[in-house]
Image 1 (cartoon, rainbow, N blue to C red):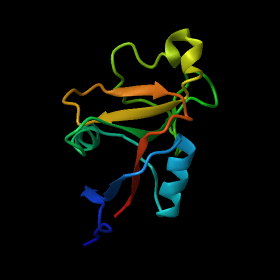
Image 2 (cartoon, rainbow, N blue to C red):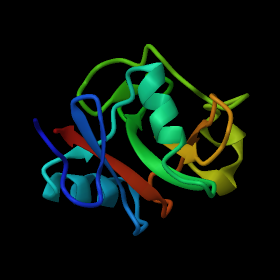
Image 3 (cartoon, helix red, strand yellow):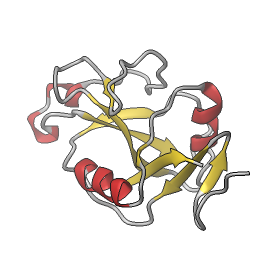
Length: 136
């Protein structure tokens, strides 16, 4: 039976790692790759629930979703289009047109929040935690 490395959470056939460090979306993705993983692709309600409950305190963490190629066309890092989503109300908004937020082309999840919809778009340069995923 496949297992996950120490510090990872197993769910179904996958292992998940919540980084204790923070960094940009690109830095998070690179860290996941060095761990033989990639940023998480959320493709089921069960997976969304698991990730929502990863922390008790509200924590902002990068997920593998971006519209960096084409604005408003959200794609997962594995190339699949976004079909199932859990955006917060009025999100994604690309910063609401406010220059202080800049382009918001990367998505994060708020873990530790007891609602289903808690994704948000944010500047890819912001310093957040990240969640890695790999096969068990």
